[in-house]
Length: 129
Image 1 (cartoon, rainbow, N blue to C red):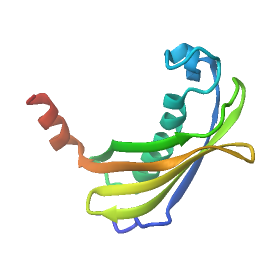
Image 2: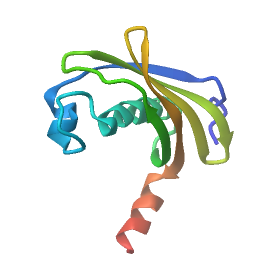
Image 3: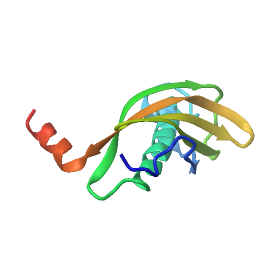
């Protein structure tokens, strides 16, 4: 595995909540507030991008598991800060703590697992199914 992937590496990204990110739009609820799947997407993107910055060409990562709590609602127009920090590197398996914040208020927290894959080998396996 890439030696630069170590616990403590961290990334933060900002996302504007648009109508397309709402529970009403996604069908996960009836209200125009940030949907849990969208919040999780923001968290996963931060984790994926963090890994992408450290992986050699031809390698990528895939999400394997998410365990997240959605703690508070956020309206359309809110800016969400998604945070991903590596907590464990076990071969190709990477564990992250993930958080989402609206200003100073934490709106989401949990754990996310990703697996580093050789893109060509991974896609061959998919094609054989």
